Length: 198
Image: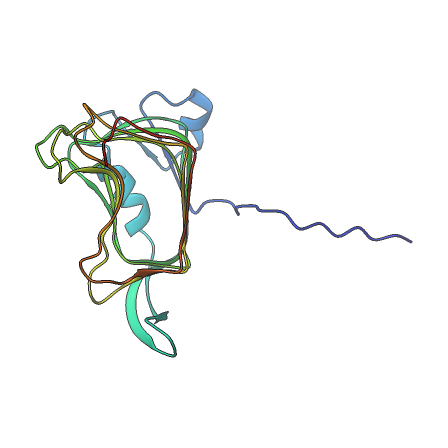
């Protein structure tokens, strides 16, 4: 008798599925939420916040943890397609969460400070994005921004993207906000950042 054991990256079935307005009919048939191409941040956020809130211990420096309450133990799948944001998509404080969004085209808002996606605190999270576009020409805007609150760091997580794109080279691609000095021990992995000077 021979046993073969393999180790591979995999993502378990999502708790909540979201389809874009231009996703395939098969994707829409599986979806819990279907976006209409306008203000799609509403459905995307709802797919995350439907999860329960839990108290978790979070790394906060060598030999130090803090106890926080955040969304957790949850996974979502945003099906391939185009998602148009009317305002910034804020991914709230989360722990042990997965967002599977490969094959997506997320278009950020066109308002002056129009960051497309902002991640707040994250702990042991896995976020797999497709292409994120910043449509703002403001120097304070970004395609993907990690900006945790002081009470919840961004730690021990993986964030990947297939592309971050900008408009007229005026905004930022990936921006890690240093304000609270609490982004550490994460892996950021992407294949393309284009259309930015920063």
